[in-house]
Figure 1 (cartoon, rainbow, N blue to C red):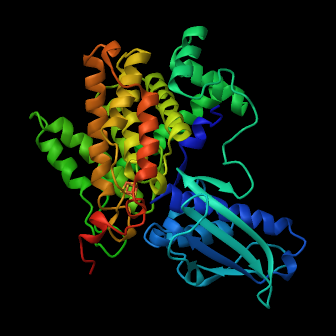
Figure 2: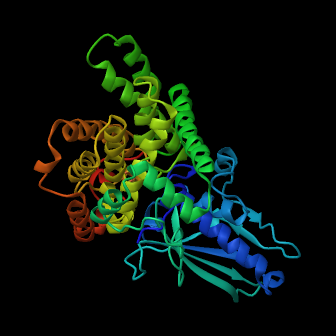
Length: 450
Ligand code: SF4
C-alpha cells in the first residue's frame, strides 16, 4: 500500500543530488537529534562519518560531505542557506549540542571503496566517539533516492501506519478506486493526502502552489545565471544563451523546443550550482518539471488549479514508480531519475490537456518505456554531464509521450504501466553497478578532467 505524501516526493532543498545531498543532510540531522537525546553526549568529542557505495564513489562531486556537516550543524534542506552550505569547507565545526564540545569535519570523512553488502548502495554510518576513540553512539542510514532516508531497523521515511482513504498499490488498483469512487485522479489524491497527513484541502493547495513557485524561481534564476558551474569540469552555463536564441527565433518552428530546452537547462544548472530546487522526483532530475510547468504557465496559460491537478497526477505516477521499481539512480541508473520525471511529466501534460485516466496511464507508460536501461555515469561525479542536457531531453520525451498518448486509442495500448514498471525493476537489478551513480564507466570515463 502506498502511504507516501505528495510533499515527501516534491521537496524543496539544495542541489545537486537528492540522494547525495538532501538525504544525507536529513540523516545527519537525525543523528544530531540522537546525540542531543543521548546520556553520553557530554563525553562525545567527535562525529566520524563513513560513506559507502555510490555515496563514497560520487559523494564529493555531489556535495555529500558538506550536506552531512550541514545536517550535523542542525541545518535542514528546506530552510538551509545554499550559499553557506557551499562555503562550509573542510575545517572542523562544532555541533550545536549543549554542555558538549563535539566536532566534525568534511575533510575527515572516510570514503570506503569497493563492493558492500548493505541493503542499499547509498549507505552512511555516523559514529559519536569520545576522546579515546571509543564509540558512544552509532547509526547506519540509507539514502534510498529522491531525498528519502531510512535508518537501519526502521521503515523508510514517508512510510506511514495510517491507511489512505483510497488505498492502492499499483495502477490497476488505482483505476479500480477511481471507478468505484467516481472521483477524478487529482481529487482522489487530495482525499488520500488529507487522510495521510491531516492537512486540509486548502493547506494542500497552498503547499502545491509553494512547490510550483519554487520550480518557477529556479527557472528564473537559471535564465539569469552566468559563468562556470562549480567543480573541475569547468562547465559553462548554457541556459541564458539558449533562452536568448529562443526569443530571437520566436517566429520559427524551432522556438517551442528552444524555450523548453532553456527552461529545463536553467533549473538543472541551478541544481548543479547547489541552489534551491524541487525534487521531482529527485534533484538530478529537477529540471524536467520546472521546464514543463514554466511552459504550461507562460506559454499555455493554464490556470493555477490545472497546474495543481497536474502535480497531483504526476505524484501518483511517481508513487507507483517508487513503490514498484525505484526512483534511485544508485538502484536504477538514470531511468530511475530522468525516466521517472519524464513519465510523471507526460502524465501531467496529458491530464492538463483533458486526457482520460487511460491516456494518462499510456503517457506515463510511454515515458518510462523509452528510458528503460538508461545508465547513470556522470563525469567526475558532478550532476552536470550528462545530467543537465538529459533533463531537457527528458522533458522533450515527456512532451512527445503526451502527444502519442493523446493521439491514440488507449485500448490499443499493449503494455500497461504496471508491466513496464516491473520491467524497469528487473532492468535496474540486472544493470551493472558501474552504471549506477558510481562514475566508474561510460561517459564518466570519456573525458579527461583538467
Ligand atoms: S546521470 Fe541521471 S541519474 Fe545519474 S546523476 Fe545524472 S541525472 Fe542523476
